[in-house]
Image (cartoon, rainbow, N blue to C red; front, side, top):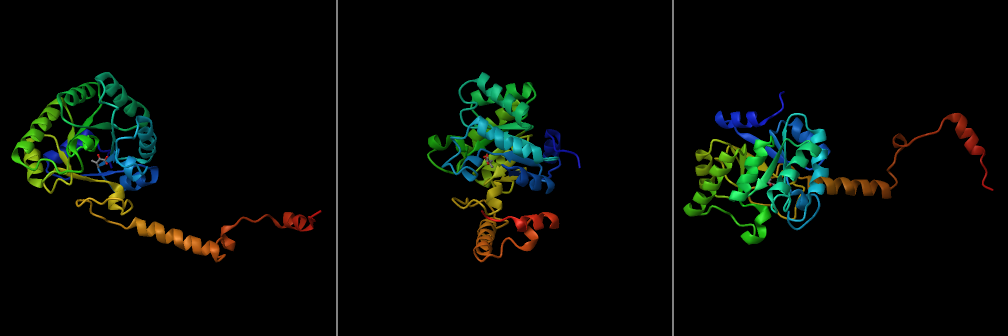
Length: 282
Ligand code: KIV
């Protein structure tokens, strides 16, 4: 199997073949997701919430994202790894933004970065990154790093005017060279118009059936993160129960002296055992 690249992703859009994407934050999860043949693995800043227990994504830093991204890239052979640029790693000035994007590519092994928003400032950063060889995945609709200005986890693009605004920004991001666009929490009619008017693929999360591909948070599909489950997050496993049951069974085995068994311990050889038996407590 050939590793997924920006060309593969564009080819899928051109051939109307759906693109698959999931988040991953650690080595073993990334390994299995890669082996399952998922096209894009996003080391999303959602890890601040689902892996680190923060209230939102705003507090995670470049150094923290770097640790998780390195773990993921070590495991991945074929999926295209994208890392989220965390809040305030690209918002202050363009030089800092480019330097941080470059750090992610050089140090973490990710192939691309994701930035939220579609202002002229962001579009400029996208263009600069692409010009120096850093692929960028754009992100519009509900953008979690704008949580406090949006005023909550609110659906975006609910009317024609707002959809037009998102489309205008999307077209500028496409022109700037973004290889794809994450569209989060917009009605599917809005996502459909945007998808049909772009040459680059849209990757939807809570954006309906007409996007070029879909992304979900891995802890949501695994049933592992239970603090908040969005309407669009389909659950494919119940890891919360698996973990609780396994921990409970282990606890019972230890308490009831069923663990460890003879097969789960180390022994010294016969000769040493005989010497050991002669040791007397003084
Ligand atoms: O941080 C994240 O997980 C995201 C989503 C698009 C999945 O940005």
